[in-house]
Length: 329
Image (cartoon, rainbow, N blue to C red; front, side, top):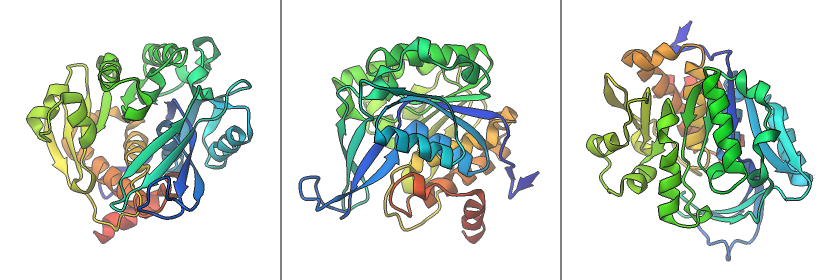
């Protein structure tokens, strides 16, 4: 059953691994953190956003990660549950706090970050604490790179990937570069690339493409330096210019939807969640250009809608909102 060439949302389980935190966003846009008169708390963390994006579209999602055994941690676990994300993979750490990030929105809607993680609970997830049954039941296993920065979380991340892959899951990777969290740019590049060859689907932003390749050129030639033969799909998101896609047999671009952007937070996560929700039951879409283009158009619509409201999670669209935007465009 398709709608505008977009398949129905799949019923297979999508497991998202990594960090969930609280973003503190200034009540006034376009000011520095120091000048902000006040802050609103907004739940965030890319892997958690992806899980909620999937659930919002009617998909089946679970989150695996560690939160502080504190009010913020329990609030975040409650938000996942409220949106219908399975919480069997969530742990609470009594010795560390839930991570916080202060995020300023510059006048152009782009973001600057300041993190409080010293260490935060998500960094303390150990391999033997993982819910292996949940991970083995994933059809898609999705992750970022922030969980690679320090031990023991790094080992937990590598173990979870291995268990998911052995159980036959599609591995989806969005590096989600946050340079202030890494000891150095070199270390970030090295560690982000260290698991590159394990993924089936990788999505990078234009900024990440520049960072990882060391070249300012946002073109096919540069993007293809990130191609590895084990990949099924490489995506480069270009903000208001849509996205480019690369597979073994074809490549191309899909235009964006033009909306009035207020806050770009979560747009990439919304895009990824939409893509995964549409391919989880039928991965042959990755080999069929026309069907893939339909899914990417839908994902672009979801990403665009997410920029029209402040905060990531409250802005994640339902399927009907995305179809409305596609029809009106």
